[in-house]
Length: 527
Image 1 (tube, rainbow, N blue to C red):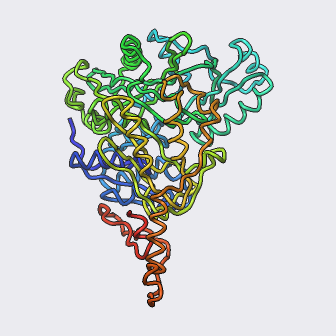
Image 2: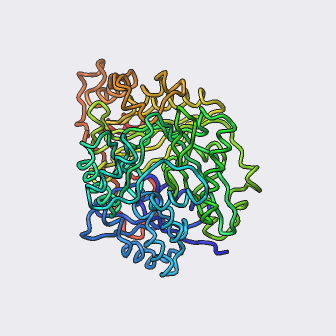
Image 3: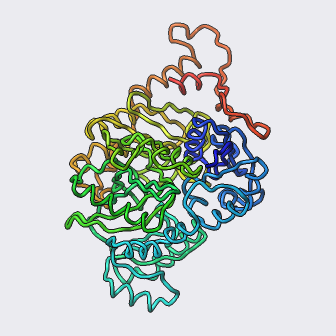
């Protein structure tokens, strides 16, 4: 077994910060990388060291450069790399590069990633393991006539899926042959841009489907645990909006069967580290169908951590160091991985739901987050003075609420969302509040098309509540004086935008106070 002393996080935003926090709690130093366009990114200031990468490559390409990541890892003396999710996290060539340079990759082996990272290949693994799959084609060729024939044989409606990557990139619903050619081309272009590989396949679409997934951990000694399941059915454009653990609609028999199917697939390939096995559940038949394996930590891993008490990121690190899974999780056996209470996660994004979810960009002029019992925040962009750019995704922060019952967890989440105060950019908070109160959600009768088929979710007013009025009133008093003292001479008020974080020489120490704010804005921001 090898104890890591310094871990490079090959990512950005909230997941980079999440990994750094886990590593710091274990007494390990962390290294951040950042592109020029991300020089004010909060993850840069959370690390013990920070290095600029990708000169001239562009905002996303910088993080996708294997050579740049390896260069920094060697220069900084990092003995391990955690990839987070997205970007290089599912690239087996990156794993090979780490191994070739004597650096431990915190994740599955390259051969496992090649077997499971390609969704078409993963289907073959599932079939070999005796796990049911949805009828689908092999990887599509270039002959459109042949593609149409394959589609007709399976039958419409269909779903186009990218063979590599995740997050809904490259996915397209295809309701009939008249849509096929255009959507295949669109999906290929999107997959190529997102993952560097435009390959895809067609899969039979289940019209009333739940999206459920099983969290897996496997060690280097051949032991695999499942950490139970999550529900991820509340989606829009195949991007998850609300995630829950455990899935509130499953019986104990269904839950045990589902989790055993997930464990069975990973045991078939001697899986190591963290992974997620995704399934669709047909609401009409109750059957589970394998979709894919994500060989990495997922955005929604927080809900599983809250109901099991297992730090998944720390477990990844310990497993990569060669520790047995019992030590990595603090659970002597699979039997000891128990569920405790209910958790749900909402993603707060800079999107306008009433304008086709178009992302908003700009400076966050004021920010106050939720707090209180049972509330967890994971963020990477959200702070007063932070800049949301057009180069990266629109996620501001993830809010996770835990309580003993699902009803109490929902109520706690609703309360937390109402505490947020974000100015300068649009957010989806009012939309998510509306969603949590909808009878279909509360009755657990929703499926993956819930948002698409429920127009009344969008019937809400952008809030300007009493607290907002109070903040405005306080700021006005600070600038103009109280009405009773309005005739007194007032010094000029400094109402400039908050200063951005001061850039630091590299390597950068851990962040202290990023902003030195003055004037009435400071009063409003921190109320």
